[in-house]
Length: 250
Image (cartoon, rainbow, N blue to C red; front, side, top):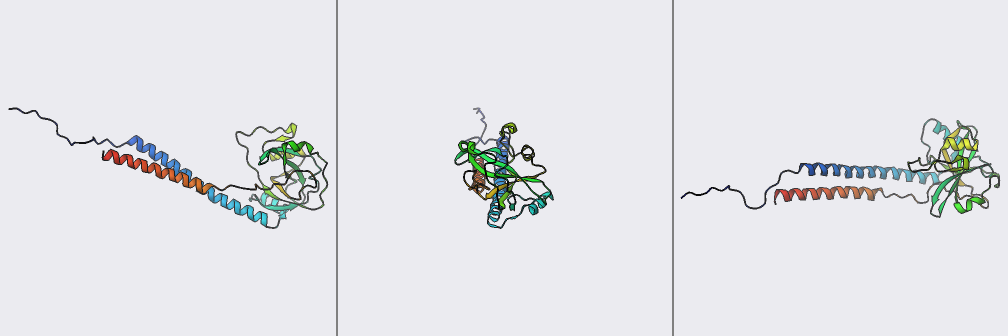
């Protein structure tokens, strides 16, 4: 009696081929996540150095502005250096309004110019501090008093303009980003230094902008962000390995 032949095979699920597309996608995603984690670690080290530099600047004695600007003219970084300078007219000369937002809400940082001597530069822009938008109309050029003591402040470059920053309005004395050459020209200040002097002291006698040389609270969450990115990369690796195991042993 003839018997029919049947293909022999193992019982159970069918083993599937190696998931090339899924593997490439997983590797690309993991490379991205790990790259973001490494970037946050670098940002963490940068932020720690910055915070230490700010703490040292606020605690240490101020240096003469001309001496520090000589270093700037040689190409050295003078950001967050504490300085003092003779700027007797900053409360009586014309000023510009730089739009800013603080915890209290929208307002302006008041920018004026200080002419300097004995330096490679002829002037430096002084950020006198913040005034709320509703109070800005109370400021009047020339309504302040001449200063008899040197001013003390911290040099800062300022944040660069981004693609969402509006255009400055020099004709209205309103600015949205720190364009030093244009601001200096509007104030009639020649050869401006490539930095701002963020005023710490003295505070104005009577009404005036509140000096705010550095942010009161600079966040440093980069370690948490790094752990998050590395954790997501590890989780993705675990999901991928579990998927391979199920395909290998269905």
